[in-house]
Amino acid sequence: MSFHLAHKPSRQEEKEIERRMNELIDADLPVTMEMVSRDNLPENVKLDRLPDDAGDMIRLVRIGDYDVCACIGKHVRSTSQIGRFEMLGTNWDEMTKTFRVRFKIV
Image 1 (cartoon, one colour):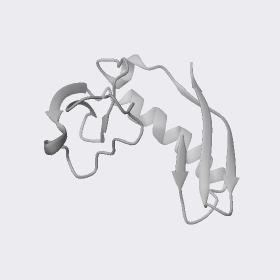
Image 2: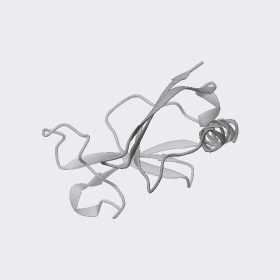
Image 3: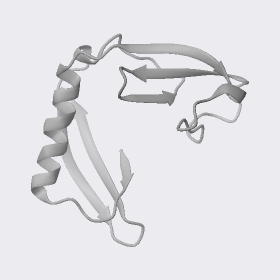
C-alpha cells in the first residue's frame, strides 16, 4: 500500500498503523458490493487501478462505512474473515513524500 503523506511516519506511528488495521479487522465490518454506472460513481471513488476494459458498470466494494472502492477481485463477507495484519516493512520516498507499507495477512 502506498500513501502520500506530509512526513515520514515515526516507528511509533507505524506500530499504530498496524494496531489500527487489526482493530478494524476485528470490528467485523460488513463487506458489501453494488454495481453502479460510471456516471453514478461516488466522488471519492477512483478508477485508475481498474483495467481499461472494465466497462460502463463498475462494482463498488464497501467496507462498512469505512471505505469504498472500485474493484474486480474477490472479497470476504466481513473483515473478521481476513486474519491478522502484520507489517513487514516500510519505505519512504522523500522526493514524492510517498510512504509504502509491505504487509502480510496471517
